[in-house]
Image (cartoon, rainbow, N blue to C red):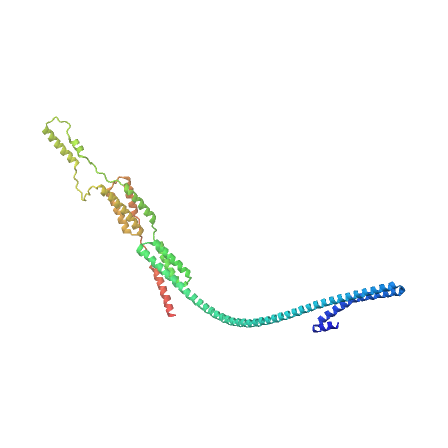
Length: 410
């Protein structure tokens, strides 16, 4: 027990407590055996006391005591072996515990070091992050201030552009109106087209209406006056007149030329002047034949004296060209109708009427229908008198001059 106590002095209190518990366990195991041996010895003594008289009983008791001693020795030896084994296991456990404690201490130390390093690095990074955040905050404030300044500048520029844009838009609209009024005057003066000029004037008035400016009242008033003047011009059915001319043009190929009356061939003439009887002598017959021939010739040839020159008869080629010229005359009348040229229109119809009356049969229904159509179309005024619409353009120019003068003074 003392040796065991000395061995365990180098260990911790827990190791000593484990050793003491192990010794107590060993003592506890050996005590029953000694008690049993004592009981047996007592019983043996009692038996020996009761049987002292018998020598056989004495030898038997000696033998039993020797076996008991051997058994006690064996038991003690076993207890010692068990105690040694337990002590060795205890030492192994103590060594393992010490190794684990050392490993745990080193691990804890490493963890502490790593944790300290991590904390230090995190603190360092946190400091850097805070510095970056502060820098970003400063930059953000500067950017916000810059954006605020830009917004102020943009607001001022927007207001200026809105003001300028309003004036510019009005200037553009007025320039467009001036252009349209110039085109309207050109349609009246050059093209003699009241319909086109009227459409342009109405477009100009609509644009001025969109400006919503009361200062252009005089301009709109002048435009309204010009519109009323153009609307009073008689309307010409250009499409209907054009189609009528086209229908007359198709009838030209159906016209019949004036026939040549009393047109006879020489064999027929000789047959008519031949005498009925040939019983007379040759001289008398020849003389009679000559007289009859002369009489017939006098009847066939009629000489008329006219003040106008007589046009010769037309060949087939000339008839073809006459028809083509009639087509061209009617087409020229159509073109003059579209262009509003009254002089050219009348001249074309007069020429076509003259040719039809001179070269084609007057009693033919086609000729009469064509002449009637041409005479009806002659009464149409393709270029009526147009009013002066320059008052609206003059009013607009005066208004623009006043605006420029006002801007110059400002």
